[in-house]
Image (cartoon, rainbow, N blue to C red; front, side, top):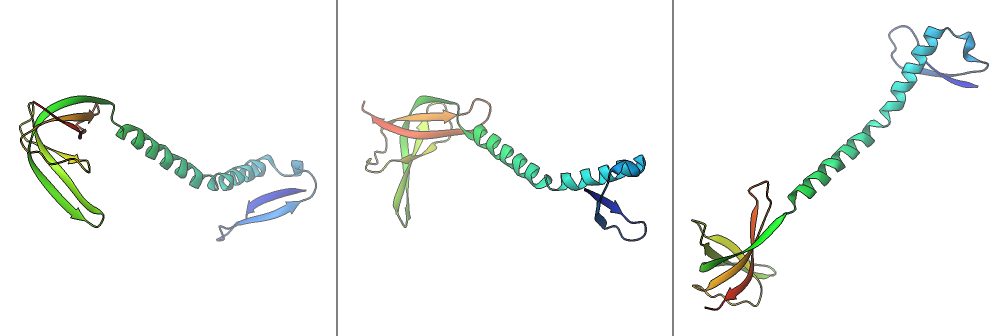
Length: 145
């Protein structure tokens, strides 16, 4: 027994499924190839959503791996100002550090239980990617003169 997919001539474009007992040698070769093409179209339709999901996941993974910083170095600067932000969980303190090689000061999050010492030398960890403009500064410690 074989499952046959066919379209009836006329205005109706809906496929008609029927079972065929016997062998398919009785059908003409042209009809056989047309039926094979129609069956192939129906089979590919069920795989299209999976292909889109796989493509989306590949793009997300590529973006995540590209975001990770690749290099870091320790830089020195002077704390020039601070800013405190109050929110539901407590407060965050940012200090502004003037680096020797930068015109504008950079903002750095100060860890909890570290005092605010304006005018002191600061050691920062500069994390960056080699192929882009991404830079992030992380507070390490105050430096005693």
